[in-house]
Length: 81
Length: 381
Image (cartoon, rainbow over all chains, first blue to last red):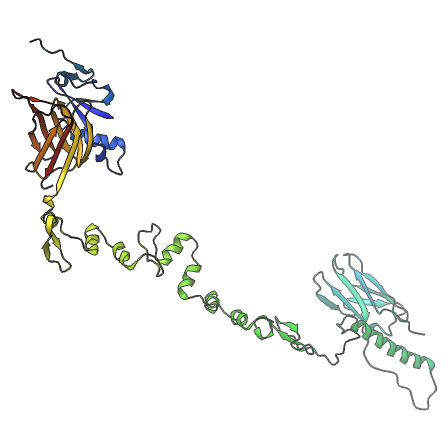
């Protein structure tokens, strides 16, 4: 599945998952994804499109996901208590 | 002198030079000859004695003519007998017997007969076995041909005279038609069909039929399988007109407000649960928020945005009229941890809803991903 990664100013990331049922009958896949991705990014944040398989394998440390355009996603090391 | 069974005719091909042409049959005097020149098309000219030719020789066994002019190749010149049919000898009663005079009389008679033979040889004769006699030719008529209507007589006829043709009565009615249009009328073509027959191509044909070449407008044939009702739809100019034809509400605003338009134009509240379109759930989604986000099922949702642990934005496919719609949700793990699970609204906009899913551990309430998160929304769109 293709997803769009939005890079927030604080380096956290948001991942847009398109809902397949929203694709209209006469839309190409490219048209559909463009429409859905643009609508879900009203703030026009920097982004990169990638396959969902490129995301970190586990959400165990989801709040530690960081990202930057051109550098994709990495997991920040948790602060030592 | 006797008269032999000779051919009293001589024909020569001209060569542009020859002027002397002999004949070997007996004549009594120079004027008993007829000289004819014919061109290559068969047009004949009778030459005049002295003016066009002279005659020499003893005449009793032939002689020759000498022409003044010459004729080129392709022309012919014919010399033939052309005696007057008379008997000029006068035998005096009681006079002396002149055998020469008698012989001349008989010879002239034989020559006249031979002259007739030459003429009859150029005539059309019935077969010797024919039972017909007294067959007469009518006077020639311009442009007509000879035919026999009964096998016994001859008459002139033309193709414009259908009574002379061996064709059916129906075909006779065609043959005298003066124009193509009259011909087609006789054949039974209607005036409309005749306008089709001269169309030079398919596009023109369709235009004559009243069908435009793009098939945007056309008259359906009477035997079409398209029902009369569908026809009333086909000419509707827009969706509103089609709704009217179908008897559907024509006022979308009224429909949203739960009113339907009757055939009289009056509006009536729709019954039961359909009293208002706003009573219908406009969007909903069920998804798995653990691992890679997985949409289980949905309606009117364009995307889910994963903002972090227990933090999701649902983006509607068709927006609500404003942010004042009613959204609600449930969440939880279908197996395992059954501690209190809660859904919070973090931000509500016409086009999206940001929610948080949290778990009450008893000591704290923390953001938490659940494998079943359900959200639905009701309101005006």
